[in-house]
Amino acid sequence: MTYSRITGTGSYLPENVLTNKDLEKIVDTSDQWIQERTGIKKRHIAVDGQATSDLAEVASKNAMEAAGRTADDIDLIVVATTTPDKIFPSTACLLQRRLGIHGCAAFDVQAVCTGFVYAMGVADQFIRNGTARCALVVGAETISRLLDWNDRSTCVLFGDGAGAVILESSDEPGILSTHLHADGAYEDLLHVPGGLGNGLEDLAVEMRGNEVFRMAVNTLGRIVDETLDANGMQKSDVDWLVPHQANIRIIQATARKLGMDMDHVVVTVDEHGNTSAASVPLALDTAVRDGRIQRGETLLLEAFGGGFTWGSVLLKY
Ligand code: UT7
Image 1: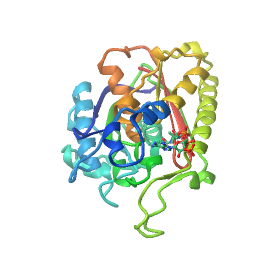
Image 2: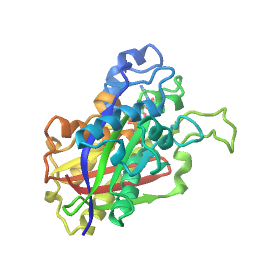
Image 3: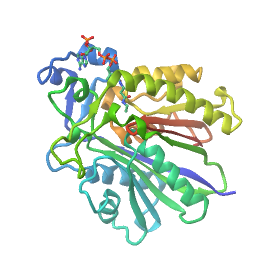
């Protein structure tokens, strides 16, 4: 049996930092409110001229180095992003050129905050059916470009960043299962109204935060059950929860659902806020590099976001 296995991880956060105190000068908010309601302390914001592919490039190089792989080894590139550099070519193609890779399939996946989980699901299929052997899977965003800096209900929540993994075919597990879902009925609860269909004026995130919060908690609870049931596993079989980093209270609710101590939940939301598709690989890379996540351990990756989209990846690291 062929599995896809993570052989290297990488990430990158732009150097420019915006703290909660900085935000107090921009909108009517407070460090205390932001920390208590979200767990966020700061976020990293791409500077002018720094695009999603710039962040993706650094994260990808870090992941390739960790896996001991070069450009010649990569035979698939999947980039999860909602904030592409251009309408086209895809950010995956722009990244491919930067990395000096030629000829392999390269494309973007757009599932907002669930993007990286979707990208892992897609790459896993390519590897398990033998179409690819060494995939570069990236979540990268400059979501700050889609914020209304006068809207305190959204601008305090998000930040920019990138995370990446190298996924290789292996006889050893590996990704055990992926579960991907969407329901477009909830478009109005979380969206950017503008686009080529509606005109490019209204390009800022709009969110009914409270309703999204409740949906996220309930839906992520269900995906935990679905994932464990599909694998015949118990809650106690999961060593690490690597959740989407949107709000510490949503993360805590999922951990409670798993009966998991917060010591086994990777939390990085305090450091970078909600980086959309970058958040899961950023958290994963952090816990791999600081030595918390060890080879052979079982990881549950999950996310929920605009669409609505939601999903999970259960894997042996
Ligand atoms: O990643 C994709 C999915 N997105 C999410 O998962 C985000 C989900 N939603 C959330 O994380 C939370 O709903 C928020 C953090 C966005 C908001 O927290 P909340 O506890 O749901 O607050 P709320 O929206 O019910 O607002 C409570 C109060 C309101 O004031 P009143 O009406 O009670 O007087 C808001 O106007 O907090 C006020 N408020 C703020 N106050 C200070 C909203 N934003 C701010 C702010 N600073 N930045």
